Image (cartoon, rainbow, N blue to C red; front, top):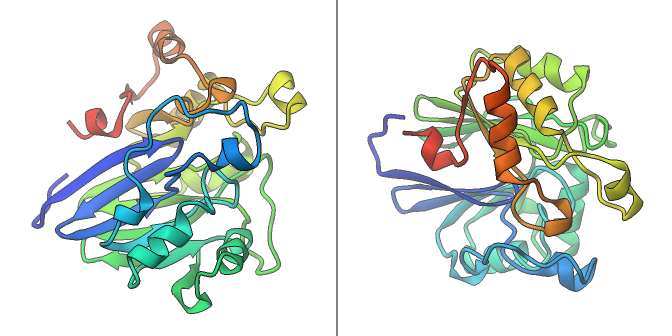
Amino acid sequence: MTATTSTTIRQLGQTGLRIDIGEDCFLFDPYLSNSVQELDAPDLRRQIPIPFVPEQVTNAKWVVITHEHLDHCDPHTLPQIAAASPGAKFMAPEPARKLMQSWGIEANRIVASTPDSQQLAESLSVKSLPSAHPKVRMGNDKQPVAVGYLISLNDCQIYLAGDTSACEDVIEVVKKQSHIDIGLLPVNEDNFFRRKRGIIGNMSIREAFGLAAECGISTVVPVHWDLFEANSTDPEEIKAVYQAYAWPFRLAMSIEEALT
């Protein structure tokens, strides 16, 4: 990844990302609280620390959300960022936009995610791709209610899948992209026991790897396995599945590793 301005990118847990370009900050699905435990499931404790508190984010330019679930669209994170960074704008599908407005974020600061490329900075643009969570569904605006994003950062194309299952509706769109250097793919598989306790899982490791292989993704970074014990995946299992087959991509366990 080349850059004329200092650029850093780091993961925040689940599907969260922080991109810093010069003095400006761009956030994707920031979950910077314990709201899941406090508001929804007392036993879902964070396994990794909060990387920074939202009140410290005074330089946010854009906050980009994949869908409305608490660990992606957080009522204890987004209003605090909106207050600390009064110039920040927010991008999201329709259900998440409605939630943000109900939390007091002004409507004129919130824009719709769209399959058309949107320029967030000189070196950063995004466009939305449909996610199946658990299937592709459309909102009143005729756009998917859950999305991933194709992030173009300098000369690097990053696919942040958000929460998604593997299905033809998703694969067909991802395959149409010119190239994807890095795929951040969720591997907290859907299964009977998670559904029994109300957890909507995503792809299994093999499904995520199969999607990457079919779509020609160069490097895979597994995500959504690290935050909650009941919804986690052992990283050693991820590595074992990768090593057991001749997958046509590189595996990196972090975005930092993927960029080296």
